[in-house]
Amino acid sequence: GAGVSQSPRYKVAKRGQDVALRCDPISGHVSLFWYQQALGQGPEFLTYFQNEAQLDKSGLPSDRFFAERPEGSVSTLKIQRTQQEDSAVYLCASSLWARVNTGELFFGEGSRLTVL
Amino acid sequence: DQQVKQNSPSLSVQEGRISILNCDYTNSMFDYFLWYKKYPAEGPTFLISISSIKDKNEDGRFTVFLNKSAKHLSLHIVPSQPGDSAVYFCAGKDGNKLVFGAGTILRVKS
Image 1 (cartoon, rainbow over the protein chains, first blue to last red):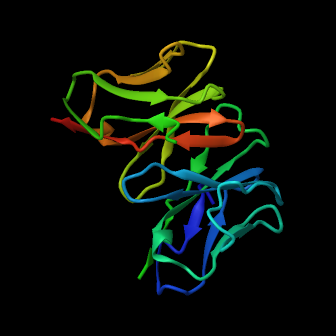
Image 2 (cartoon, chains in turn blue, green; image 1 turned 180 degrees about the vertical axis):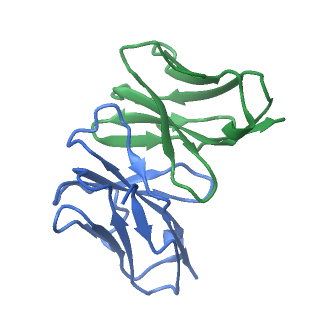
């Protein structure tokens, strides 16, 4: 597709449920990022992939969060046993290059997760 | 520890005038600084960047100024247009990570 595509756009989960959020990056983009944006805040880094390799997962807030990109294209962010504090917009971004030189990333529209 | 701060939550400007958005940072390891623009229900889109070794970068109506000694950068939009109304995020790049501020809502009144 022309841009980064994320699904679902909106997800409501009951506390304790598992959720999976999907990201289709721009075709051919090597780098893929997940960011979490809480209400009224800027995006916060979660994790980074270069092709299928997860090179940095320092931003994942707990071991309930897991991300994968098995074939180096589509990525899934999984949150187990969701908690209310997980409510946020989850943004996926991609970049053509392995090194993000100038910082230009292409973001998707995000998946808004609400945990009740 | 907030590495990037945008102290003005909102700014209102008359169409045709200059908009100045400010950003302060603490991390000396940032090698690039960026501004992203975000409309409601859309993802952030890249606007302009500046290397840490430069003090100014200009792209059309948008100019970013960097003052390394003060750890301060600003985005100037001249002239401001109603379509510029959006949330503007300042970010610093440390390796492959972007560290964002909380954003400033810009409203350009016609």
